[in-house]
Length: 228
Length: 221
Image (cartoon, rainbow over all chains, first blue to last red; front, side):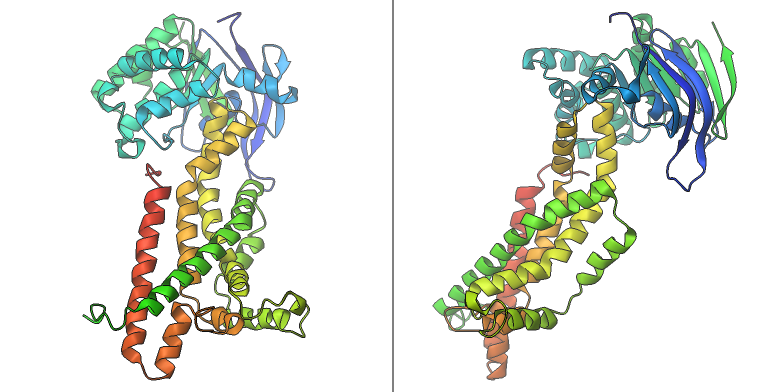
């Protein structure tokens, strides 16, 4: 895992279109590997936007994203991809690719050029861990919302990210699947992976071993509580 | 019942049906060559809504108007008269390809626009390169392309104005299902026209099913 990853957002402002409202207003925050954070707030408070900027998907309208002392958006395409491959983001509404569950999970490894044997081994492990064995060959368009959510999480976990951002990961899961996910994330947390969760149900997320709770309001951070 | 009467399903009818499939299929392939890249470019670049509106309006382009324009271009004293394309299957293919271009672009663009942002975001979040992202978008939106191709092909098959004006309904050369139906009705052979009409419908449905099963195995749910 090297020296770990530190994503530092400095005075981030973001608009979805030039004439629109600010979705984020002057956010300064960091996310480290080895730390677990919950982000909470009302709908429209900017949680998902903050996650997408932090996970290097959206480019901020103003401000800098500093990753291990590099200004991310000024890096070459090659370096950007290299850093992106060290983080993972899971959407709140799972986006499934065509094909089977296994194909969905394999995809993120295949695009990294990882050898087939290694791909198979890592997929087998995550499929077993998240209880997806019985549906691994099922077509992705025949999954329930909860199953699709777990597949999307498996697709992220299989890449062994140093920081994983999860937007409402428990939303579609029943109690049994929630327990499986909590166990998997707690395991990653203990291995030194950074975990950032947006959740309306912080009491579940707390079982993972949370260090910080960030509260957002109207595109700003209104409070940060340190639990450890 | 009428279909069962073999007197209507003679070799000429089969010949007309095969020619119709050849001309409409070629027009669809030709139109796809430019329409699919245009729709992807539009989905990536997010054009002004007026550009979308123009393509959507052109979906309803009167075939007679397009036929008239092509007749003007291709007739012996027209700007492209030297090509000697008037009353040839090639002129029909060109005309139908132009006719279905707005359909192919509008339908595939609408689908691609909806999914390309999601797929592109997913690909970026998984660490895909630019090329991997483009390949994934094309792969994941192929169901929309299939739908647009089926619609374009059906429109080309059912088209009459261009086929008559630049094809001329020449027996054993440019006569297709629609022009044959019009010809049969004009000389009072309604039953034969009806047989051809039902056959046209049957072919359209069968080809649509075939394209769909080839193109969207495991399509997005």
